[in-house]
Figure (cartoon, helix red, strand yellow):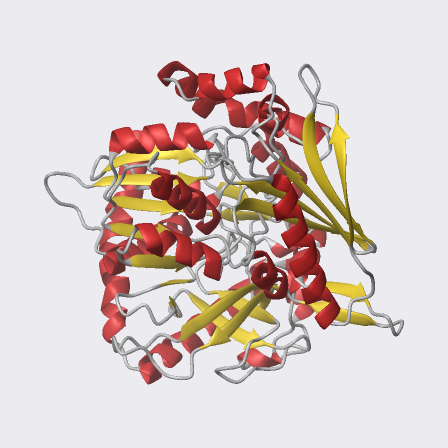
Length: 539
């Protein structure tokens, strides 16, 4: 990253963050008037400079209210990308080529930062911002840091992030833009083996720890087992649903303030917790957020919506006006006691895309929310990680157990409890368990417990019977030299194997004998990795 460019970004972002913080003292009426002004400016700009919006808004009056504007989704955005952007030099195929070779903070055309979503909802989204827009996004991140008490001081604070480590991810790029020595920062790749993460964190002893909830859950398991020995004063997370089991695991070992950030690649800083922790304050001076049902009708506060319609008030290069984000969110009925004017999301429960539609005995279909599956899996003892994959009429569960756990009881518990939950919801089918042996390439046989169901198949792998080669691999990555090599190169090899498989395994899985765990990301798509390797998850 260019030091000159970084200093230029920070020189603007810091005073702009102070301006954003001053908005905390606004009244609700002042905020809404500000939104109306910014929306009118955005619509005028889009009409004048975007061929797509010029046609879309052709029949509308010059002065329109938000609910009069049409809704667009990711498919529409990507299908009409070249006409939506307001700089006609920007072409989707060229941006994809730029992303394919991106390894640093290189700017496209010497001006634009280009980032992408992981494509976990079925299609990758590509987004672009000019320098001034990017600096406002950075100011939003600095504002959330202020909420969390992460301010410059001497001696410098030790901040560890365990997240995506690729330049295509917006949070990686934003954090690198602000990393100019104010804090001591340790960056770890979330796809690195757990032994590597534990070793590096033990050496660094972070005061602030940031990661995805699922990774925090794994680290909490290591802390409880005594392998991880850190004492952070603050925890920060984003990118996924905060499940009850993850919250319990983390709270058991770290009873410290835990802040949640809400953002997407489309709008990097949508909101964050304040010290009251009543939910995520929506940064409504940067974006307008509507909680709506499946027909885009407003949902009252206190009721869960089916999606969000987000209008980015910052980005003029790629106007996003009433853009669909499929997060299941609930607006709080009461304002936060902190007195800020911003609305609060009291719950983020995943994505509407994650809801499964499974056949019933009567011949129809029933919608099964991920929370129903999580509640059943949360009751299974000794479960470290799991993946639930729905394909057609089959649902497959792959699980990794904690050290020393027997696979047979775990497989039985998963089958019985998940089967009971599905049956209670009216899903057709009866589970039937059977145990099989599978050949372990290059080593002795190990046991795998498999449960079959018309809508269910459970696989639980135990590492206790892993071959000599896989044990050697695990020991090697726990050394200092192995950790150095793994952090820098393992995720690259994993990515190649994952794509070539396709999506069924990684090099870490082949080498260690543990299954791949696909993390179902919810809430923000910001910096969500396209995959997570479970190598080393259960020691």
